[in-house]
Length: 203
Length: 203
Length: 203
Image 1 (spheres, one colour):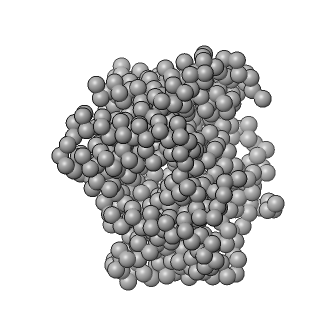
Image 2 (cartoon, one colour):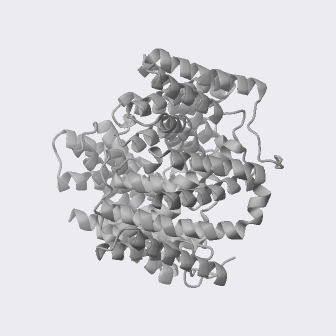
Image 3 (cartoon, chains in turn cyan, yellow, orange):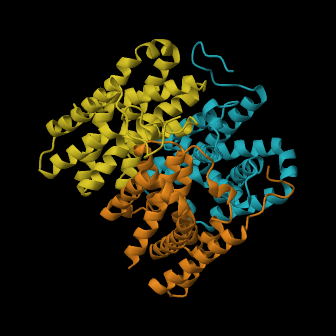
């Protein structure tokens, strides 16, 4: 079950990576690199910091699913672009899931709740940061259009709290993931934004 | 004592990260990400290479201090910009400290003096490189305005030498850090620069 | 023998890094950073993922050879540019060697053939990606001018296959490396390119 959710998250993140590749007129290799990096980058960063072999390097599905996403975007990117609102909802689901799973794994490895939550956030947003850096743009996360990192913070904090209270297993993961998912959806609907420093205006 | 010095270095590096965020008109999330990355990136890179869990993921202070720096820059960035000459002196202190501490840790983990010094340099300058890459600019280090990497090289080399001579502990660390600090201050005063390749002129 | 081949690959990759530094009018420090990163980045990424201490941090030659390349480019970059066709051939040799060696090491550490091949590709192209990100440009790999990643894929896949068939040691490594090298040379001659997504045209 967890694994199916994981693969859905990876698939959606990979779609976003491959689409950035199309928009940048990269070739199929560039699309595949961006798809793999976006989908797997956050989890790899998490596992490197936890000092364990990255999960992406022992699961076949984790590597193959981004290739599949690349093939789909290669042939049908206009159609994928057209269903972007739906993709964005799936991306919010991936965001929620990744922050919850990442935090849980970090708690399991004995990090403090604060550090586990930080690592959960890294799991959720690390891939997107890599995608943008490789594509030559400032990570969208840094100007946090419609709150992207903040839902991950919420989900990670809740997961760390639940784990501390000895509530783990998939119901807790799902609850934390849903909270992050919900806040992200609300933020997209209401176009919520994080504030700029005092006195600074956006261009 | 060492820990207090460490936290001061982290605070100053985080200030520089958050300030870059303000200049780039990033929101508070982007400011915080840059602050954390600038402050912790070099040490995390060092610990990943040493194959130990990054110190930043077991210390509360390391994570909280950059948040504090972000809050200060968020509300008072004009004032912080005004005291930049003082901040630059503190940054030079952080540079010196980080290269000495990084080299010492690497020697302790059994690297050769050459590799320990290399890792000391990475500790000192890694965060700034990450900050600039994320902010979408070529790392200032690469054109080394007024010698930034060179003082780190000096401090790391001296620390590695002292350690080889069985001189370690805080007096040795402080001596190496002060040398790097001193060269950096002199370089800023005299606007020393590293040379361009033969026949190349700056634009 | 393996070690001599390794050092040649590192030297050539370092040349390409230092040359990018000259073209970007970076100073000697920037040139050296790019040389080290280009030469060692892929192998470091591989070893971090394998969860072992990076080979670059226990070999003196790995660190010194990029410095040597920087010195050569510093004084004689016009001459190096003039022999770029020859350098490109050596770079193809480095590409072939790195993907074969990286895949072999990953197989030895017990990864599946799929993951070992992926890690071989990362070993071969990781340094060049780092070089381009640091120099502020989209990695050339992503638009794969004249097939750069594809030869690495071929060489890595063949190496993983041979290892699975219990054929390893230097003849197998050399065979895989030569295949990748050959495809890269053919791709440069015939200006082969990877396709863009359906309906997308290059600018």
